[in-house]
Amino acid sequence: MQIVAFTASQLLARSSDFERLLADAVTHGASIGFMLPLDADEAEAYWRSVAAQIESGGKVLFAALGADGSLLGSGQLAFESRANGRHRAEVQKVMVRHAARGRGIGAELMRALEAEARRAGRTLLFLDTSVGVSGAVQFYEKLGYTFVGSIPDYARDPDGAFAPNAIFFKRISVT
Ligand SMILES: CC(C)(COP(=O)(O)OP(=O)(O)OC[C@H]1O[C@@H](n2cnc3c(N)ncnc32)[C@H](O)[C@@H]1OP(=O)(O)O)[C@@H](O)C(=O)NCCC(=O)NCCS
Image 1 (cartoon, helix red, strand yellow):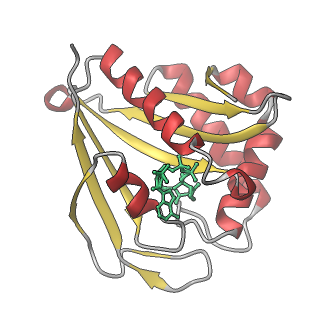
Image 2 (image 1 turned 90 degrees about the vertical axis):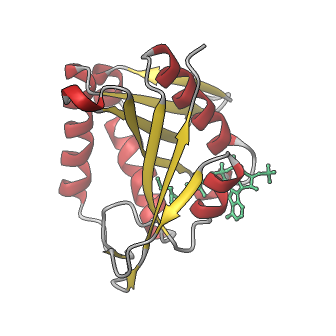
Image 3 (image 1 turned 180 degrees about the vertical axis):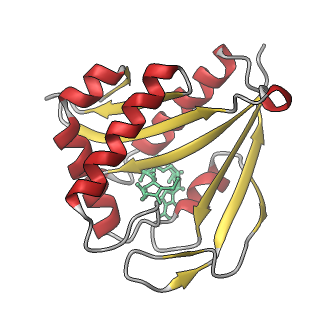
């Protein structure tokens, strides 16, 4: 397994793999902005928008690739561009294929995102996930993120039920 930073054109060249990864996560209950059944056009448009953000420098995308090159997972880091927040970045849509979970791939993706944040001089990471079936809360706690709180009924799970979110942060050193 290797973790690779993807350019916009690399992402677009493998967009169907990323669409399948997203569909796998949503099908298994991940609350990452999409409802079931996942709309194929919406998923395609989503990854195109990620490519545009990579191209503009606002975001980095890391992919976890198996020994055969298959896409096992991905994660994103979005850089705050406003003048008073250029020390922070948001961790977004870290997802690992359901069949490949529990093998340390998510943790490897997070290590790559944090190393990238350091390179970019971003010392504060934050994220918003769901208190749901995916185990994301335990995952981020395990990786040293501090739980800030929850907003009740913040978003619907993919099956339509309202669920609270879970907000986390981590300070990282750039040295
Ligand atoms: C959250 C997610 C990315 C974890 O990926 P993963 O590759 O299975 O995680 P790892 O194997 O690297 O686990 C790292 C640590 O997190 C903890 N962890 C991960 N999943 C867990 C779960 N479901 N329950 C409890 N702890 C869990 C483990 O303690 C593990 O530490 P260990 O090696 O000491 O056991 C994956 O479950 C996923 O894709 N979920 C759906 C998408 C999602 O909700 N993403 C978060 C939104 S940003």
